[in-house]
Length: 113
Image 1 (spheres, rainbow, N blue to C red):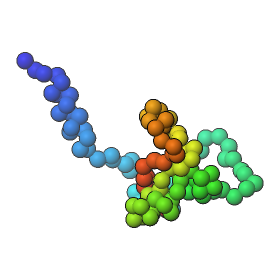
Image 2 (tube, rainbow, N blue to C red):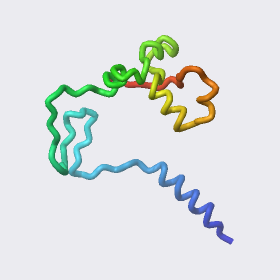
Image 3 (cartoon, rainbow, N blue to C red):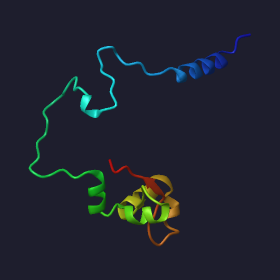
Image 4 (cartoon, helix red, strand yellow):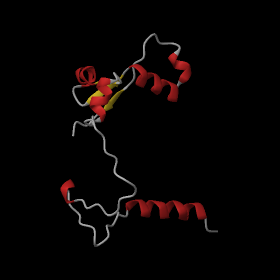
């Protein structure tokens, strides 16, 4: 008798090995400058203030401690702080928060690109 579960498992394994093929009209390049915008939806918002990236906002809001994370891990990681650490606990293990006096969380990898 044929076991359909084995067939589905084998099929999924084969599909996982297939590469994502690009369309012929799409240029493949490692350079971001070569990307072409195919479609825009809605209006592009315009702001009268300079943008901040996620690292600048996180430092400003005291959500990450990049310097301490780099000191502990060697480089490239940050520690959650303040409300970000509280959110981490609230989303994952609410009962554990009551056992700690201050919030601190695991190191996370941050790219400076």
